Length: 236
Length: 236
DNA sequence: AAGTGGTCTAGACCACCGA
DNA sequence: CGGTGGTCTAGACCACTTC
Image (tube, rainbow over all chains, first blue to last red; front, side):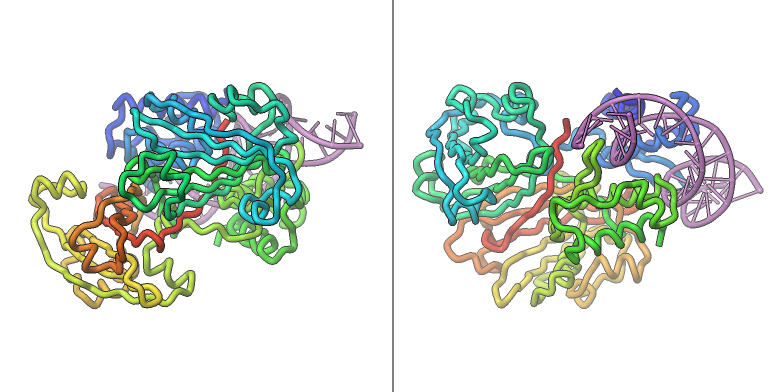
C-alpha cells in the first residue's frame, strides 16, 4: 500500500474511534509531516481522501476540521455491486435467478442499453429478497463475447467477483440515472409491490478499463427499500 | 483564476466542442507541460478535475482518455440551490412562498432537523411551479440568529444568493439523503399530485464554513419530476 | 506578525502499457 | 524496450486566519 493510503487509513481509524471528535482539528500538515516522516505533498494526498469521504473539511489558514465520525455509505454513487453492498452491511438476502438467456440486440434494445445492434448479449433477470421481502429486480444485459460461460450458478453469486477474479477483467466506471417509474407486469410478479404504482429505477451503463461497455443494468427497487445517502461540498 | 483551473477550463472546452471525441486521448502530461509552460503537477491537478467530472479517464501507462463529451449534471450530489439549478438549465419556473414564520425548536424538531433544542429558527414553506405544474415543495428551517431580516421577498428569490452576497456568509457542505415517502395532507394541497401516493424526499443538513449548521431542508418532489444522474468510478 | 493551508516548481524513481 | 501515468520529495511563495 502507498504511503498516503497508509496515512489516510491511520487518520480515518483515529476519527472512527472517536480519538478526534466532530469539531476537533487534526494536527497541522507540518506536524503530520514530522509524525509520519514524509513530505508535505504525501500528507496532503492523505487529507484529500478524508475530505472526499466527507469526514474532514479543510479551512484555509486554520486547519483540517473533523465534520463527521460516521462512515457515509454511497449505495449508488460508488460503483459497488449488490452482492458487495449486502456483504458489507451484513444484511440477510437471497438472490433468485428468474431467467438467463442469450439474445441479439435489436434497434430498440440498442437505444436503451447502449450496446451495438446485432451484438450478442446475455439477458439476466434476478430477484433480490431482503428480510423475506421481494424488494429488488435486476435486469442485466451483459456482453456475451466477454463471458461465454455465464450460468445460473455464477449469476446467483456476484458477477463482479466472477469478472474480476475469474476472468481478470477490470471494471472502470459507470454512468447512472435514477428515476421513479411506473410498475410493469413483471414488477407485479417479482416484487412484493403492495398497492404502489411505482418503483425506483436505477439504470447503469458499466465500462471496462479498456473502454468497452460490458453491462447495462436496470435495477428496480420497491419504494420503501430505497435510500440514498450523500455528502456534498459547495463549489464556489 | 489559478493556473490549473485555467488549463482545466481550456481542456473541458476542447472536449465539449468535440475537438476530442469519445475514445480519443488527450495529449500526454509531458506535452501539456510544454504547451502550457507549467510544471507537471499543475497539469495533473487540471486533469484530476476532468476525471472528477467524468469527462476523462486516466489509464496508467497509456494516457488520458475522453469517455464523455456531455456535461453530467448533479442536481443533488453537488450542493446547488434550486434557484441556481433553474437558472443554469434555463427552465421556466415560479416560486410561491406559502408561509414564513419564526418558531422555537422542540425535542421532535431537534431530532429531525439537527438544530439545538430551544433554538429560534425560521420555518419557510415554498412551492415550486415548473412549466405550469406544481412539482416541488421545499420546507426549510433556517437558523434565525444568522438572518434576522428574512422576509418573503428574499425567500421568493435565492436564499443562497442572499446569504453569500448580502450577508457574506459562506456555505461549506451538506449531508443529504433521498427516500421515497408517503404523501402528506400538505403535499396533496401544494403539489399537483394526481393519484400518486408518494413523493421523492431529499433531506439536507447544510453547514457554513465556520462549522455551524444553518439550514435543514426537506425537498418533496412529484415523482415524474425527479431525475438524478451520476458518474461513478470503481474503487479497487 | 506568526501560523496555517493553497499553489507551483523541478526532479527523481516506480509501475504499467504497448510494440 | 521506450513512453506513459503514479508516487514521493524539497523547497518556494502566496492567501487566509488569528492574535
